[in-house]
Length: 287
Ligand SMILES: O=C(O)CCC(=O)C(=O)O
Ligand SMILES: [Fe+2]
Image (cartoon, rainbow, N blue to C red; front, side, top):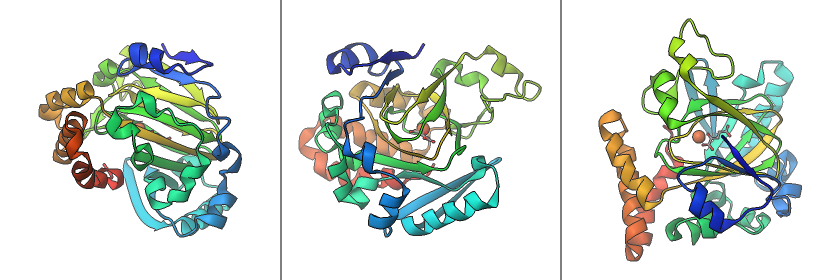
C-alpha cells in the first residue's frame, strides 16, 4: 500500500517509512521557486550549454547519446513534430544537474536534508539526478541499480509510477541486473505467466509532490505530460550493508565499489571528501 501524506513530518519518515514504505507527500514542493520557473524555455534561455545524457528506450534496446541541453531541446522539438509515439522519445535521463549548473540550486526552497544521512544531507545537491521528458516517455520496469532509497521530486507535469515490491521481482522476468522484461501497464501473460502472482500499485506523482521509494522497489514510470523531475538516491548503513548479499545475484562490479564507498562514507566522516571524489563517477554511470 502506498501511504499518502499532506504534510511532511521528518520524525515520522525516519521512524516509520525509511527503508520500508513507499510514501507520497502531496504538494510539498509548491513553494519552491523551481515550481514556477522551471520549464523548457528557462533551460533553453539559461542553461543551453549544459551537457546532458539522452536515453532512448526502444523495445529491447537502450540507446545512450551525449549532447548539449540546446541540442536536446532541438531534438525534442523535432520529435514532437514527427508524430512518433512519446514512448520512444528522447529522454534527458539521470544527469547531475546541480554539479553541472550550480546556480540552479537557488531555485530550490527548503530541502528535507534532515531525513538524509549526513554524508548526503550536508551537500545534497551533488547527489541529485535530473530528468526532463516528453509526454508519454517511459522508463521501463527496473530497480535502482545500487539498491538505494529514492527520494523523488516532481517539479513539472505528472508521472505515473507503477510500483512492485522487491519480493515480487522474481515474477517479473529479470534481464541482467536491474531491468525486467514485463510491461506492467499491459502485461503479456502468455509470455510472462508468472506475472499473475504480482501485486502492482500505481501512483500519480504530480508537480509539487515528493515521493519516496525504499531500496529495491521495482518501478515503471510514464510521463503523463512533458515533465521535469529529480531524485536523490541514498543509502543508510543498513541498506548499504544489505547490498553485499546481492553479489551472488549478479550485482555489477562497479556497484559493489560504489556501495562499498557509500558504506565507508556513512561510517567514517573524516574520509568523506576523499570518498566523494571516487563516488562521483556513479552520477554519470549508465547501467
Ligand atoms: O522518472 C523517470 O522516468 C524514471 C525515474 C526513476 O527511475 C528513478 O528516479 O529512479
Ligand atoms: Fe529508477
